[in-house]
Every structure is written in structure tokens, then in C-alpha cells.
Image (tube, rainbow, N blue to C red; front, side, top):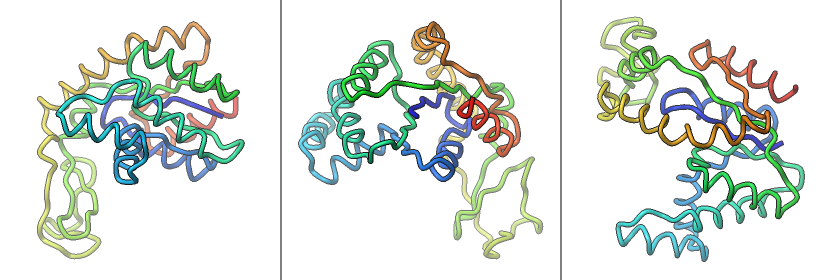
Amino acid sequence: MNIILLGPPGAGKGTQAQRLVERFGMKQLSTGDMLRAAVKAGTPVGLKAKAVMDAGELVSDEIVSALIGDELDAMPEGQGAIFDGYPRTAAQAASLDEILASRGKALDHVIELDVDEDALVERITGRFTCASCGKGYHDKFERPSVEGTCDKCGGHEFKRRPDDNEETVRTRMAEYRAKTAPILPIYEARGIVARVDGMADMDAVTASIEKVLQG
């Protein structure tokens, strides 16, 4: 089974993709991770991508398509893929169709995690972690039991990601909407789009996704 997981930054795509990997043995194909791995491994596509990035340019659709093709070819027969962060444009959607068709595969589902922008801003801007062990907390939803002390390791230093601020979050949301708006109608016309409440409890989101996959 091959699916696309859509949702703005902070919607929980990474968490849900990881759960699908564990539950169904699927492989998460994140373009960013694949690029870094290919560059590190020095594959032909990786070397081409490195040259482009070193020149300060954006990696072309052609290179990304080649990366995805390589990943699909390396996967065991019958293993499903979760496309994360790709496709972002109508051209990439057409390219993905070709990549899959040439390997006798097809897209089964496009699942969008539906979120409320204001609630997502609150969710993201309130995040902070223990600087020592990395345990995650939230200003409103999960504070340390003892103020200023990490529940897990007893550390007293906490940190926040510099881009977890309202302006950045809203910009990323707007970017997401602008980029995904053109590709959703393509898949809606095929009747393979399902929307899941991304603001629900994490386990409830997982259950909703599994329901879609098991049809």
C-alpha cells in the first residue's frame, strides 16, 4: 500500500508516519532525509544533488524523482511507502504517478491531517524540551511536575526551538496551503483523499488513519 501523508508543520505527520512504519512495516520516504542519505552515501544521484546544493541552488524535481525511484527499487517486494513532503506541486504529482506506474505500483490513499490554525500555533509555540535528555514539554498541556525540574532526568535547563514562534508557524501554514492546494484536486478527482482530525488525541488520529487504510 502506498500513501501520501499531508499536513502542515506541527500537525503530527512525523509521529503518525513512525506509527505506520511500526504497525504495518511501511517505509517512510521523506525527501529531506533521502537527500541527506544519498549525499552522505555518495550515490550518483547524491553527488548530483550535492553539486546543486553546494552551488546554493534548489534541488530539481528530476533529482528528487530519481531519489524516490532509487528508494522504491531498494524496497522489498510488497513493502508499502509513505510519501512525506512529496509531492508538493502538480508537476511532482504527475512525476510520482509515472515513477509508481513504471514499477507496477499505484497510490492507494492521500491522507490529510486537518488542523485548526490557531490551535496549531498554540501547540507549537508552547513546546519546550529538557536540554539534558530531550524530554518534551508544553507551557499549557504538559508542564514538569516540579516547576523547573525535568520529570525524566532531574535537569534544570530547558530550551525552545528558535523557529517555534507565531510568525514562523503562520508563514509555514500559508506556504503549506499554497503548495498543497494545487495537488489535492488531482487526488480528489480519483476519490482517494481522506481527511483526518489532526487536532484529536494522538492515538485517536492513529486509529482514524488505520481505519482509512483498512477501508
